[in-house]
Length: 416
Image 1 (tube, rainbow, N blue to C red):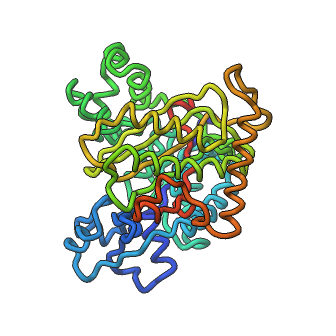
Image 2: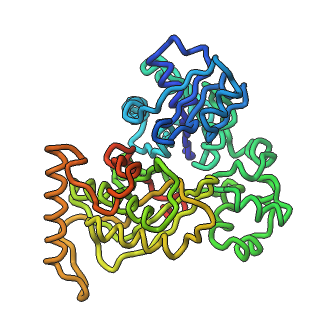
């Protein structure tokens, strides 16, 4: 028996869920946006009708309205609802396999190798899953069927909505190699530009490229992408129990004003660190690798990370490292629009401090922050605030606990 991997992608997920709960908008141009009053007013998702008007993810709301006019329906994102529906759909997937690996809220791989012994059987199972999701949840999915995860994901993108696409060992060169190289998993804009300088335009070009040259120019990533293009991806679909393990805690926010100096950024970073640390303590977890993400007013973003000498779940430790990363890597050519903080390298149980750290200090800081959290839970978030943020009226309205908390999966290359 060979390997059979499915990649299931919910079509226009956010917009489809909104139409599911409000059938009156089903035949209209629908976009899901952030909170406009808090400057989160960009298009997060759209349906096919909105796409026909030229509306793109990332457009501002006013740009979308200019393209579509009065017909446009704007829905404010309801992430709790989307997560609830996502769990309903993935519970169907788990009836077919114990190996179901999420790739975001609306995508997942399913290993059905134990169920299928031929291409036709694998396609039939994919079609059955599509039918069940429509009948039981009311949404459509596109499914890619292949012998590895990378090609299965490519397949789910080929036909939309509500379709099954088979990429087999016998047809993948005809189907995949003619596609633009940027459609391959993990080929971003920067990698695409490097490939173009080497006349690598299609996935087929990458497949026949000199592996030694790719390793020289891109390192291990170049070798991995070369293997992807040739159908040599052998990564496994994670088991349900492994997939459910939290890999990191993070939070990010689009600020109500453009941040113009280090002090403003520091205040936001420490507020985000508080919300991250609180959720870590709720689960009894510690982390060692702190990441800082920043986006400027031109929507250009980057992320940097560093490792702490000892695990922590205290916001001051997390915030201090995140702010240090910001100072080291941001040159203030543009004002800052959005900031994010994340911590990974998680562990549970008793923490072993190094010789430079005092366990009593960690315990004292944990008790202090737990007291603050208790006050906020009883009397509201604003009962106690950071002094350095109170000088700015607009920034002082931020409440990181109301933002969408992000649980990040391990990156594909790190997971291998």
